[in-house]
Image (cartoon, helix red, strand yellow):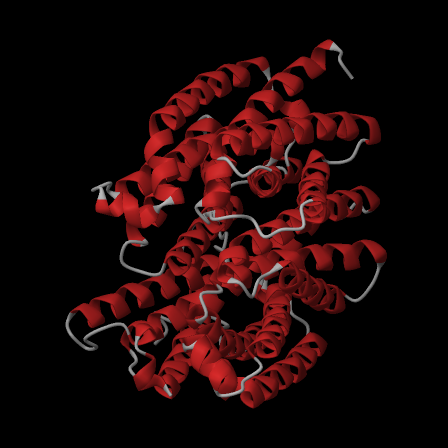
Length: 264
Length: 296
């Protein structure tokens, strides 16, 4: 389990969990679950497109994730947020379906993109993951104050002149970056589970933003580590364990703390 | 007209079934979708597709009828969302997200096991993306009956549902059991979405559920007109999509047709852009969705 070919899996899994745990807290607090679901699907379409034209999949992942994020952030000023997200989502998925049918990709490759293939992470892939990961952490640190402010007290933030749209688009950009890193590791469908389950559980357990973020990062680290170990031991897709543990954590937190979570 | 309809279009049985199924599914999706968009349940509507897909993958694995798997999965998912708290606007996002996350994990497991158990390729893609050209005529009959059932049930709860969607406080004051109506709608949504996910795939299911109603609600000023326009736009998008996909076989020298879902989504988005532009021209002064008075 700790042999040399697993090193990349543990390293990339840890980076991904750190990022998803931190970003996921804001996804949960801001009610941006749908966007967090749509952006990975856009990234999936980008990866399929990258295979079609023969460029590095990471280029496709990053560019399409950013495209989805901008699409959602900009259009949701005019339309209802959920409708804008749904339309962006189907547009991206339809492009992905067209790319897939136009290129001849092996089914295992598609399944790896959808459901994750943590053993498939090579050392060459690890560097961009680390670089973009550090960039995302810096961006999140820079956004921290306006993000907490607009999430916890939106009216007050507006009164103080914080531009909610700018914060929103900047936040979705960070989500897109983190997504592009996470998709090759845990897959397009389960990136979402990692961004929702552990943070939602942590938000029930901890009232203050600081401790809730720390708890969210801790829970998502535990989730990914247990998932890697279980996936290795039982030879089942890692996505199953990420999804199951995320739901388990949320339900346990709900049963443990029998109170309605305090203000957002 | 031969430039529009490539050879064999009129004589093709598969095309005829696809057009019929597309008509039924687009109609039901658009009508259910108007309520989903009005209630701000686009996310739940989409999530139920993926939940239904997990059910379908499970049915495939255990050798059950696929349609039962899709609809059973969707209804269980709808019940779980309701139990966690889909009825509170604040908790809705999280409830949907947690159920969706868990369902994705199950789908990963079922599809992995199903792929290991059989040598057939393309299973994953067929389950996830679906194809309107693979629908058999026996499925068509089942889909028609289910659609009739969904529409009949929706007609029964339409008035209280509309009232509790637009003004929950007023509905409570009038004695509407908002909670029960909401649960019934979630189940109807799950059945409609599960049914469309199996015949046209998860992408199109969401596209037809949200796209045409969102376009119609941008321009229509009365509820009934909105429903009729949404249904028309949905059926139009589906039929044009099937036609373009059929024709696309002849567009490229390689003879590789592009998927129906791609063309339907393109038409749906074009319709939406046109509806938005029409509204800006002043067809409707302000969003009818925000003005309940003109709607009942």
